[in-house]
Image (cartoon, rainbow, N blue to C red; front, side):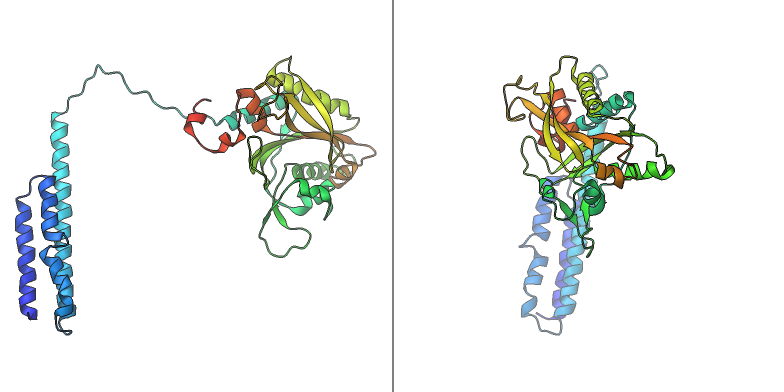
Length: 356
């Protein structure tokens, strides 16, 4: 078969296909047309399959012509399909009846995430106690995240906080990290305050909320990404009694006057003495469950600001003292709302989120 014959055949295929399409009045017939003129056994596809048998010098022209025919048929098919669907929609709208007596569909309202709700509650309570919110950065230097908090390079206490490092080139002993706690903000805040009056720096009473990152083993009580609220009070004459009173009052404001709390001796390089702050688990009534592990749920760590940290923040530890604490808002929310798994907070499951 020569070039003129093949080209004439392609013209005929295109004409026959377009003529047949004019009589198509529904989608079922249109799909039959598509199979006949664009399916694997369609005439135009047979031309493609026979290209290898044609002389080499005419293959490009025949292939181009066959492709143009195929594109023309596909374009006509798409236009006809759109027209049929538009006609069907118009007919449906013309015959559709609206029953104005039917009840309206409820509007789904957005709501605050439970983590946001508990954070705002904590802001309110601490605001009533005289604390101000101070924001600090999530991507931090090793110096502020560890060294100025009395974690020297190579200190074994660093193993308590499995750290994510940011690839920022060679920085020696001061790499860039995703902050493992909000405590680094303490030094930022004290340096800002002491810079205003180095000889007699002002008192500080702040909370530092924010996300922290640790390479944790994920379970019902632990996540690799979670919120913390750091608290810091620095001034003259501040004692451990002030710290205990602040956290005990916080628990009563959140959970009622009869809530049971306890302080357990602990160790943190940036506080001395240090303690863990626990609240009796409401989920099991103090009997022990997968959330608390023994009847009490650790809410956070606390202690008196270490003299080295005070000095690094520009405060003379012989004159000033202070306390600090780091709380887990999500663990507080678990007790507040009876949530038994901390992983629910970031799964974005609407069945969970719509309960709040």
